[in-house]
Amino acid sequence: MNAETYLNHPTFGLLFRVCLVEENQELFTTLYAQRLFFMVTTGSDGISFEPIGRSDARLLVENRLRMLRRTGASQEFEVLQHIHKQTFQ
Image 1 (tube, rainbow, N blue to C red):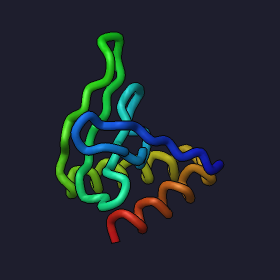
Image 2: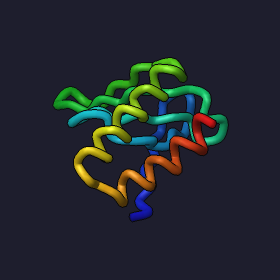
Image 3: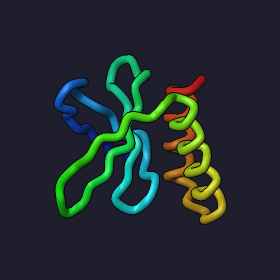
């Protein structure tokens, strides 16, 4: 699985999808610097961007990793673990 997802932010430009957080909520970061993080929520009224801090973003990714490990989604776990290492270490 090598499906990368990108989204164009009105101010910050191209964003890279880090992971799914919950249904209709995904974590994105700026493509090049990977210093600004956004919780992107999709709904019937469109897309909303909520900026979040680096430590909060890291916590969300680590929670997602724990959930993937519990459910046995090994391929998605490995991909997200690689992204986690690239982004936060």
